[in-house]
Image (cartoon, rainbow, N blue to C red):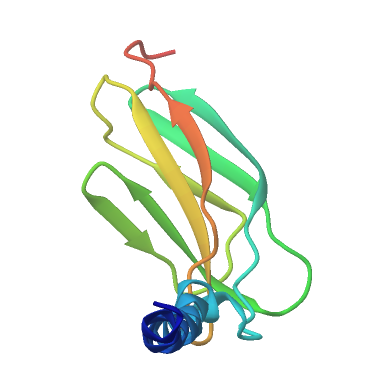
Length: 123
């Protein structure tokens, strides 16, 4: 009976060792020294008649090169690193707006979010 156990232990040990090597695949992508574009901070909005003026503070350093603004199905890409942007002709509804920075390789930052509801009354 002891001899039969020996023959089962070796294959099970081999399967266990080979299975553990593949477990590294779960976190391997996070071990690279990839530098992401830093995010904008202090995102605020001033709402007006069907408009929203977005303002933020750009990150320090020179990694971030441009800005991307997303809301609903709209994507706005700028050609430079702006610190404010005016959204015009908005409908009278709530908008969840995300502002990203983009580095020279096209990598986006973690978004900064703000929820705005434009005014329906002219001043």
